[in-house]
Length: 423
Ligand SMILES: *Cc1c(COP(=O)(O)O)cnc(C)c1O
Image 1 (cartoon, rainbow, N blue to C red):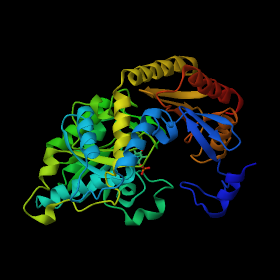
Image 2: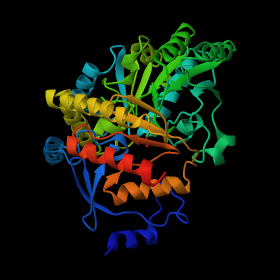
Image 3: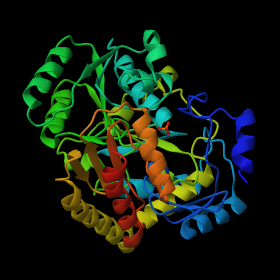
Image 4: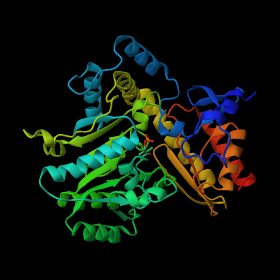
């Protein structure tokens, strides 16, 4: 009986879904660790940590305990004029893991709003200092979210195509690949020389929505450096890369040049509740700090820094920093490296790449992002009890750190079988 799936069809409009082509949604009724259970009690290993959120496992007991205790003590606080202990504790915990130049934290609800806040910070930074700068620079295939600002700086796709005429002013540059570093740097230099560039937003080293495309550290470091020399505000969108996934707490740590602003969400609250934070340097904050009220950042959300989400984030950071979780991380990284040796020379594999627990494999064929083969692969994995979401001709794995060795092998085996039986 697919009671929930059937009833779902009546009233629910799902995100990123063309309902005429994809009428069925699978109903998930419970989850634990790296496993999802559907309404027929079939198990699926969560190979993508539920959109990169549940890194410490679904329904983690430590997080549940903290959330439960918080729920009984303090629910909602108006975060304008009031504050609360959990937000303060979270700010202190984040300062210990964020790049050292980050000093101030601004709360919102999701990754897209974290990007929008970052963009507003960058634009108003210049505005407050009496400069008219209206151009944002972004990577060609970047993804920063679905709200208007975030969508404007994202690469063009079915996501934002209908709204192109309403975008903020954006100049797009290719990612540095190692070979093209000089060209990309030169292109950015030309754009900046117009003297009206406010900010540069990028996903550091891994572009999630572009199918886990990875780019060159040195190249990115040089681009950030050039921005710094020219007072262009740099924004690292770490919504996907944050909280250990790349093998460091934040991907920005791979570069010498640190961004002025970092946006984070997804694993920030470990999949338990929605929340996002945009952090910034003292320099950015100081441009808003004034006797003039209109120089403040007048952006706010009703659920800003809601105590429950803060308690969950705090519990997540405790887990991330634990010896046990760090060992899990190393174990998954090592396991991916072994898998890579198995598949990288397969005749249906064009390329593979890995950073931290993020592993991606490009198939040697052309495929539409939402095409038939993608659907066939998705169904093959689901039939085999593995939840993966191939993107275009890329299959990627980004499992919760707590995934067991056995579960990982099951993911790998199903990918190898898919190469032989589906592709
Ligand atoms: C998911 C994502 C976003 C958007 O976050 P939402 O919470 O889905 O709005 C922004 N940037 C990156 C890099 C992401 O992966």
